[in-house]
Length: 223
Image (cartoon, rainbow, N blue to C red; front, side):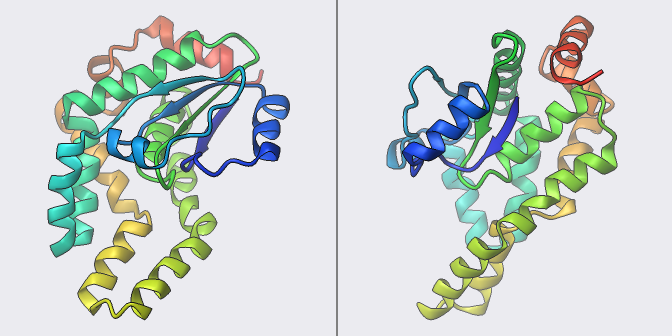
């Protein structure tokens, strides 16, 4: 019922069948920038509501790219700070929770960015926090992207190397392709600083009520 994904622009007919028939998908929440949505639009699925929900603006994305060119590690850390501290980030994650709360019972919600690991990864950390999942499990889930994206990441780095990328460029890109504990640490640090905790961020930053949390748990947790 809760699906984290990478971009959906290459879905096959079989993929669509799996999502709609097997998983009863009802809502596709696209967390990418408007430019990303335009360049690689999601395959529209019959009976599935598409929700454009940019966590990061095109302008902020371009600004972050400039930092990334010099220091990929720092750019990624800044990215996670932005998720918590920007009005756009908070509005996007608030909308994600709105979809989770209002989707018909028994139907699934999918949220995704481009690689499914950062904007969607942090969104998943928020959802799991709301559901009462412990922090160790949240981190383990977050870091699984490194396992499932290893082949894709290795191929991307090999292609860059073949094109003659410098060592600095390769290191920067490496940090952009993977996820690290320190990325999510930065988001927790920002939430603790401004909202007291990640739960505080859910309530004060995203406006979730105790009733909302109870509704989410009743809807998505097995007894």
